[in-house]
Image (cartoon, rainbow, N blue to C red; front, side, top):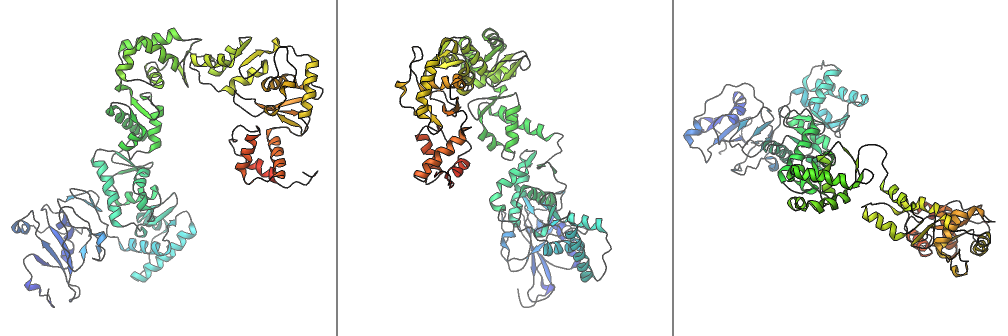
Length: 629
């Protein structure tokens, strides 16, 4: 290009720019002919002279490019003009590239196979969405300018002071820019603000010009949404979309999924539906039902056990909590090993299988109840082919299949199938009832009964009522209290020995060393277990009443601490504070963990307390100055 640009010497493919041709640019872009590259060139030597250069595409001949009818101008919206110094904002097409030329380019107007969209903000190519912005009206330009300058972090429309400040600034700017008074009212002002802002939360709105996300990132997000919908998806979770781009969005002022959803809403107005944190390609009468149907369809299509992780990977734009809701609530979802699921339609279940399953339930129920583990063993014995055919190895799987086949006749509790209604004993209650039907039993008897009936019960729940009516002679043996007659002389002898141990007001039964000195109770030697049983049942009958504070919830070790009933030690916490305080005075603890290890070592704690030891430890190491302690 020379020092002076002579418009009469322009080549046939160079058109003089004037005001009228400005209205034709959008029509040229969306014209039926393909493959044009339009570059907006400004002469550096002559002010206000602009040109449109129409270059030949590799896929078209020069003659074909020149066969371009001149459309009638209808005031189309032009893409925003940007500086060539912002190369990140020029769309990078994988098929062809914009030639690097000095001048100013139309933002992202390199096209290949254009197809007009309903939304005039966007144009669609063969591989994605090209991000452009609408030209704002003069009022909208002032709105964005005032908001960006005065409220760069967003304006709270519920804050009347902020709205008033913004309205005053807008009126002033309008008067200074256009030399006339703005005559709109409050409602019109709020409407104008809403048109050029996006909601960040329930109250705050951010000007679209205050977004500091690059156009390339916004374009990538819009392409992601559009690509998902073109692949057949109907919904995209705003939360999941935000998570996908989170690392890059954290560098912008799009801080949450609500803001991102409303950014997408702004640039895709009229193209998609937005509801309850989702972007939808069509209107849905029930969003949850649609999600459930998709999860179930995905499981059915997989035709086998599918892990929760695989489901999330297959449906990455679905929220995890909705997937879990479906897995936990739908009877068509059959659980397998932990974290794996199968659709009921993936199993080969014949009518004979169902009949045999019902027969097995009926014949093996006791008191109208059968455990799922019991059902598994019994059904395996009469129909092993069903397990081989369906690769069933898990108890829960068979229970879920039965629940699906017979949903109304039975009540289903954890690990149990119950026929009919009425009051049903829990597994723990059944174990207790069984043991208390015997005059004596062993710890091994209890374990065998639980195993044979597939009961999964907590030992502490069984022993609590048992130990009120049974003496525990040692670790293994229990006998009913009516079988052991303890004389007053024996109780007095035990009390005399205990008083030596109770100098501090308490003693852990596991810490008594001289059990060989204690009298036999009938033919049974005294043990920590038997001594605890005696205190538990006869404690109030001693000359100095005693009580047992139980702290261990297990079954195989002594459970408690013997305390003088009218002492200051009313509960387990009082005893721990006293034990730690005395030891801390002798040798201060370095930290709380050291205190816990000390309590375990002297048998005053079996495991670290669930709620921690902070409060107890703080009280124990505090400085007390009474009685020299």
